Length: 185
Image 1 (cartoon, helix red, strand yellow):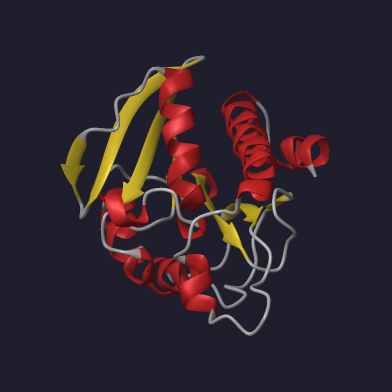
Image 2: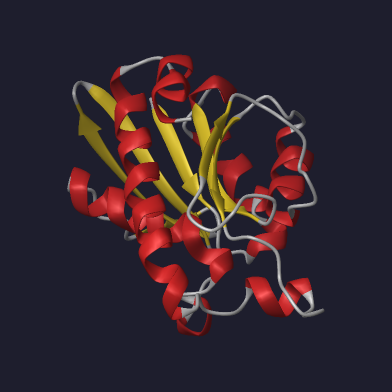
């Protein structure tokens, strides 16, 4: 079983914001894999499908970013998912817009959604797909920046990153994550 959790904030207000690229990847995966992400439980929306003989769960926490672990942990416990079968997909201020980085583990790096997951899972040993959104310019507050929409000149890059991240997640269904990292990083 593979669990792919996209981090973001629920509601129309946040739909196309920088902080919601994780949700955007889950939406693209749902389309490609024909998995309806419409089951509401564990403070999240999720869907389950079978792809290449592998059971796949796509998850969007509805807890708001800072409490993501409150959704992920109960789902992992309920379905008895091993930590090595989890990948978190989220925005990263430390990467340029559109850059994608896959990692096997790591710290929260200041990301509150990942901090919450680490706290609730009790480990940093889970896979990540980090999508670059860059840092704010001109003294803009980080919170305003991540909750803002992408600028017109960023949209092509972020669309490519969403496609690239989705491709990587699809490959992980069939290949070891280290192989996927070597291919996509």
